[in-house]
Length: 239
Figure 1 (cartoon, rainbow, N blue to C red):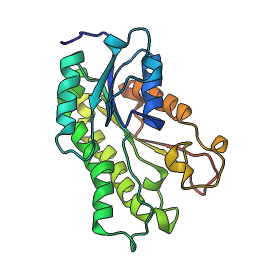
Figure 2: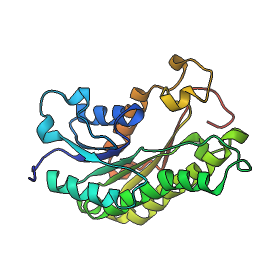
Figure 3: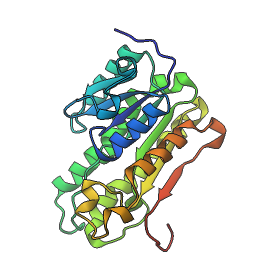
Figure 4: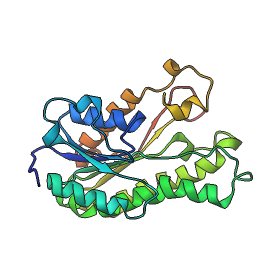
């Protein structure tokens, strides 16, 4: 059943926890309808009451499945009748140097961090262009702007590509009103970061703050396009 909604509609991948969950909750709080891409779809706590039937859509989504994006977008369109934004948040990290990594490791990160977001943008392209204000957020990383350590090198390869993907989408859709932003955080207080840094969680960028940044970016008018947005919890040479 199609629910005609006056709300703008965002699709968020990796929405079951961490950054994706916070982004979805913040957009929902700000009046968006959200379609949540999850491996195991479950209604989140923040949508357990109120207008959830009309404003929250669950989709079974696995970024490793080459057909998942097209099915998800088609299902969201059947449900809401529109797609105004996508947030490609699902990602993986294999902490190996480019010498230690096997081809399978690089392929795995490129599959989830680059190929899946590209397929999602491709699948949603027509409704994004039709809206005249389509928004694409690629959750990249500061590892897509510099190689901080040897162990993050292979991950950086995939995240540099993710940043380039965002710029390529921006170029492809600018005349149609599509705006793409590569959001590049440093350490965020998530399970992934916990295994990578000794800094206490309260000293890391909080997922809720990152969510508010994403909500701001997708709400900006076409005339205030932001190509990249870097966020960090610590002082570095350039970020």
